[in-house]
Image (cartoon, rainbow, N blue to C red; front, side, top):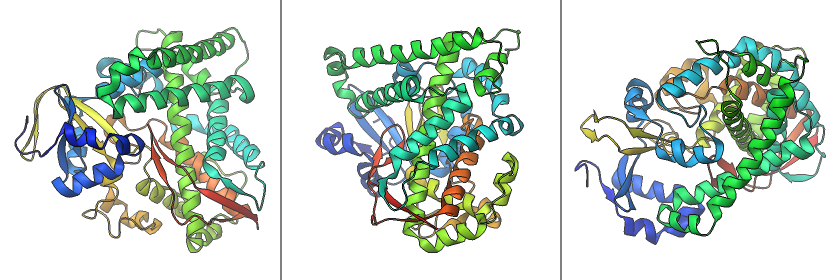
Length: 442
């Protein structure tokens, strides 16, 4: 055991629980947090281990205050990167900093204002497909909506039935393979020998080729689209050069995954929670009933504070990025816990967001937690978009889209459900499985 202060969960216990961990590791994590406290070490076999934590102070220490001492771990910088490339999400060090400086301006609120009309149009088009009175599983519907919004905003691409939907299939297949690698690291040799990894890599190469064709088509076009691809193509590094196609593809792959999955998941959870709590849904209705069709990107955040609070509370209960990971690149210490260079640390946002030390009635859906006067109280234990320099670059884009979807739906429909509970599926992001809803015309 590397650190005598940190309890250890043996590899034998991990192996004995392999089947349930593969399906959903969160109950296993909860059991160990309850038994060992807010930090413990898990043996993963072949002298490998990972430190798990739900300590909010340590989380801020790693992600924000001492972020230079911690890089993204091999789970992202190698395992995930081999499928989606070395972009903002998966790169480290100088490369990450160079890319962040290049891409950040494209996600400034003033830049995103140019995309507001596009986002609104796509949201309204997709919501027009709702069949009132029919019960549907909401996640596939929200996933298609969010993917369409990203495809249009990023690429101004309308070929949703072919190229874009194929990209969606490819990213989902890569995730499923990666999840098996992460949760069963002792079987990685089998994934290689069986050809599973090789086949997934071949599929992701198909996706890269599809994106390369779109990029080349855009480069040859004289038309301006004012979308994110235009912004990325016009961006320049400090030496005056632009991103090459390979790097562009890496960034676009990541924007597709991060830009649609987390949004679709959160929308599904918040709509189900509103259906479960009609009183809260009615408060949203009161707020959005006089919705201005011409509202600006910036106004969306200030004119609908309670709608935003509902989304924030849903992201507390069901954070789409429910964990993060870091690898220590030098020795460090936090309140008596010693971390050695090379240690992998997994941060459970899911557990932090439900920790009784930080939240009153932590399992209750209560949007009033996020009233303006209460925000500061939770600022050190709430990480819906991460924290520090690597906080999600698309957080404003996502929040605007989600406020728009929720306000449009609640204004037009009463949302109901017969599902008092929802099954969660933790993949790369946290998904609801059986969030079945009915939309009744108001």
